[in-house]
Length: 467
Image (cartoon, helix red, strand yellow):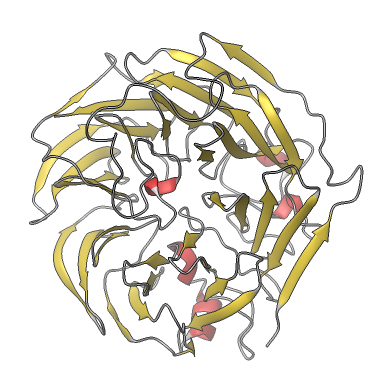
């Protein structure tokens, strides 16, 4: 079994800390010298279930398991706040985050904004440098390409970690102060053996035990000699990176927007797209379990992995879902769901159960207990998951669903087909709310702030009061 695990020692002047041009504008500062502070509503100021950070939404879908569920009182009314959306300098693919009473949103122009949750005023904006124009890349569908993956916030230190794609072709991990946007750290985050021009950083960042984990895949069009990678960057300023290369001959990108899911066992779970292999399995279209040191511990692949490879039918169009009991659910472009044992992914054909769920899954899921909200290109599906199977609870069909989250009794997603924010009753799936957004990007996911729902749509940040 081919395994590539590399501990990269960063060479001075190559992957060392680098001095890069940044600009920052500040309307105000927020909070104390460290940590996430601010005025929090009762719905967010107590510890929550499912790995949600108390009082804050500091990572994709609110927690390291990517469960996207905020327990709170039933939502009975929703109203747009701030008198309208806030205009930003570029397109938003990343999920908005919250730390204390500040909202953070990143754009493809390599800008990070901090916004006062109470009134919508911009507290600060930091631009990290010129993004990569599409004309300078061998393929792709984002122009320009700057910050695409959702950042992560270390609430203990008040540091926001974000990867920017900078000219002339370099992925750089920045640490920014949440209080004033100043740059606290920066390090080139490309693996030594990777070609940055053919790698795209689309998946959400994960922070665990002092390491920021960064997934990579290819650009739209699958150009160049790219691979799936996970890079681990210590937050203590160490000059050493961890890295894992998916051992494909080519491709096998880790591009699902939810990025990496952390299991209760402390292991990392990623899903890959297609490789070029058709005769010998090489970890294309697979679920891979990694240790915190990025050592491969196990994997799963469907029986028809070769056909999925040949047809560009990525299993990794959705990141793995880690359930409360430790099991793992996976779905991809084929629309077949797989239930996997969290203690033994099972190798090829090692699933506990599989069944057709929808036409094709894309983005990131949300979980409420042992149930999963699955975003599909033909709707949104809620599944009840048992020990050895899963069954549909309800289906809201007829639209391309962005990645869902849940606040109390409402499931929120963006109808990508019509650029509309939609809310469904968690129990019945009945539509209950609808708000036009103007324009949106694929796989978009809402976030939350104290008493609020947030959506980055096009180059706008929308806020809705939840009552």
